[in-house]
Image 1 (cartoon, rainbow, N blue to C red):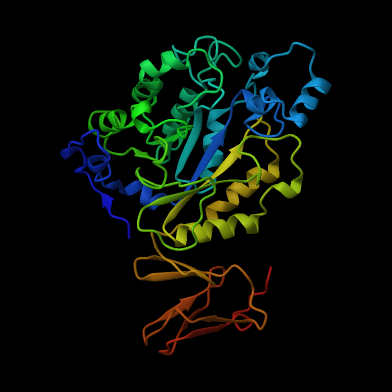
Image 2 (tube, rainbow, N blue to C red):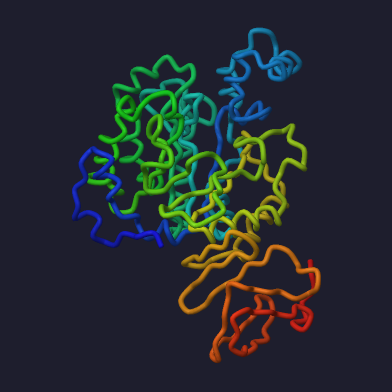
Length: 404
């Protein structure tokens, strides 16, 4: 089990060193959350072609992106011209909060700034390149934070923030201003800070440990905030409240440190792609499998919602989110590297079987029973008291269940 923190987090003072920062206990809410939702949304949602790295791919002359621009936009069109088209006209943060709550997720992470440098909030150091000055003329971050805390206050709100920017001329000025991070923590009070874009420089360059010491000691979220592991080149899988290690990290076995499987519904992109074929999206079975594998091995799973500039979602996508509320809400975990996955809560052990056995007999070699053991299948009201055995075998036919 991963040690979790209690209400005494504020009693400790953390120095700006990894040795000190890594000693901070993990806030209990995150260990118990299990499922989160990660939203990639920005100017890249307007062309919605290829990936959220659209600008970089276009500037570096990727043929597919160059051809897309030549076919669809006038000569001389710049990436900055997309910002005025980023209207967010159908953005309803209360409706978003309702969907997130229905999904069973316990935390939500919104992009505050991706590598393009455009901020989804009125940043003073990104003048004319933020959601208040150009595009929606709205504080997208602030509106969602308020909606979640007002309508569904049990949900935890967090922010993704890219340290690096591709082509913003204010990047160096941003560095001298602490990379905006202190300001948006004070303003929006995120309980998850998902840092990214760190790999080109060390954590000393980003001033990461100084920021984290302030975050854990003196920030308005010092008691509850958690952070990932992308704070400088070489830091991934080494430092942070939880490890992401790499995109879509899924080790398949229990880990000694809390980790997160940050994965996407679109297998190829974190941002919405209008040219994505249906086969590039995870099926509900794919998603359940990933959730079971992740949670049974001690991780949290964030699945990314790709949002287009105006926010239109297919009803089937919303239904898929709502169906997650019926999946995997358990508090502790046991791991098995093969076969069924197990979680536990109190005195109950939950087995998650991802494939129907060919002979209709389910054998659980890793589960033994005693004279007081009983078994109930989810979706079946019949409870059966088992005989003591070292290997548990269940007839699914006798349980009156059929494969789906």
